[in-house]
Each structure stands twice: as C-alpha cells, then as structure tokens.
Image (tube, rainbow, N blue to C red):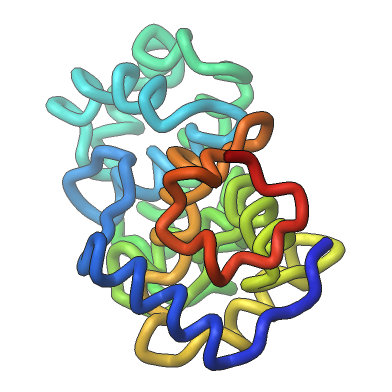
Length: 214
C-alpha cells in the first residue's frame, strides 16, 4: 500500500484525467434507472462486456420492474445464462422488481439506504446508480479502484470502505462526481493488475508506486 498522496499531487492527477477525458462514462449499457440497477446487479463477478451482451436483447423488451415480472424468471434466465451466478442473480432481479412495484410504485428510489435494501443490491451497486443516474458524488469502489487507490497513493485503504472514505476525504470536490469512473477506467485499461502500463501512464510522474514498469 502506497502512502497517501498530498492534496496538490492528487489535484494534478485529476487535472490530467480531466484533460484526457472530461466526462468519463460507465460502460454498462442501460436505458433508465431501472435497467441500470439490473445491469449493475448482474455485473457482480462478471465483465461489463459480458453483461452488455446478455442485456442487449433483454432491455429491448424489459425496461420497467413490471415488465420484468411479466417476463418471468425462466425467460430472464435464458437472456442472462452466459453470466456467472445467473440463477441467483435472476432470482434477485425478480425479487427487487417485485419490491419496486409493490413499495415504490415501480420507480427506483434515489436514496442509498433504500437501494441497499433491495435484494442483490449492495453499497457498490447503490453508489453506481446514485452517481450515474442522479449525479450524486457517490464512490463505487470495485477491484480496479481498490488496486489503483492503493498502488498509486491516491486513495489507499485496507478495505473497500476505507478506500471509499479516502476518495471522499482526499480528492478535491470538483473532481468527486467523475472520480470513480476515472479511477475504474485507469485501472481497467492502464494500471492493470498483472502488467501495469507505467511506460505510457499519464500520471506516472505523480504516482507513488515503487515498482513501476517501463
């Protein structure tokens, strides 16, 4: 775990990120808040590419909780069976859809507590939805952010909760909204787990990682 970088260094890092991509976007396909919840719930232990392939046809016919209930669990399984843990995920999607219809008039709530109360929706999923759909500066810490945060010193922490706090505490407020997307994309395409591409890294000079590659 690298030492926490100072405010001015972190600011320079995020200025670089912003120069390279002013408005980074999540890579999960969705058409509204409900399909975003479903997509993020399905993405646990799966790739965004794999989820997008599975939901491409699904979201053409299902874009509300009621339509999901009308589709039924077995037909949902047929759409998502290429995704890991698909049976359990299908069960949770049906349960959360039923709750949304019964308790929220078919609308996705915009509070973290309400989102986290839905089956299959944890804090990370809730934060993704709050950030991507409602524009809240919520930080969804996945394996990429955890790795980048600790490797670079941007937001080190021993666990996901600690990294989330480090993002909120140390990244300047004007970068908070897009922070988790910049970090995810940097980890996914540049600061990779096995072979970080330090030689072409746009924040190399500010990164605290001691074992930089060429």
